[in-house]
Length: 196
Image 1 (cartoon, one colour):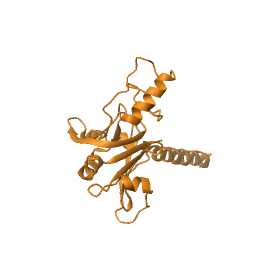
Image 2 (cartoon, rainbow, N blue to C red):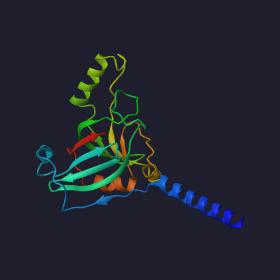
Image 3 (cartoon, rainbow, N blue to C red):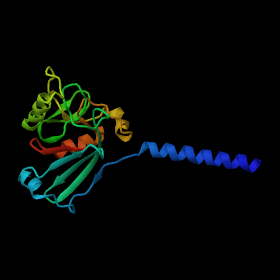
Image 4 (tube, rainbow, N blue to C red):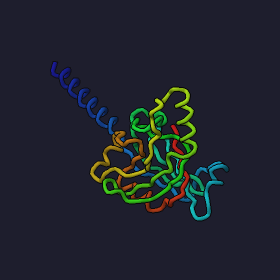
């Protein structure tokens, strides 16, 4: 009887440890600079001499990857708006848009610091919005929205990225410390693809 209680206690302790570690999924920045996966020619043509970078954000993997002319350069864990990772349909749905964008402006936001403002809505976004509206998928009174950016968490809220807490209004958010790193070398005009 004593052994049964001890075995039960050990099994319970291991179960608690397993579930507590499996839920936290700590993620960290990964960097590599010279060896990489070669990116395809259509992405390479988007790179210019003064700006060797291209960003691909994969919503299903919760990752922002930076590429340069030699291939993969860095990966940052990110979070989004809604837990529904589908494409943005209209203003207020808290979804992160999918498509091809570029960094329009770099600025320091008063609440979450480093921010890369994207050119949303652009022609591609407007075309999708209009098609969805004409098919009745979006109310006639709906607006497309604006102000989508890649920005930091607040310094004391980096945990939101570790625990996959989608909290923005449709933006892409990374840890404050990692956003400062990204901001330091990504120039305005950098191409950005957001995909699922």
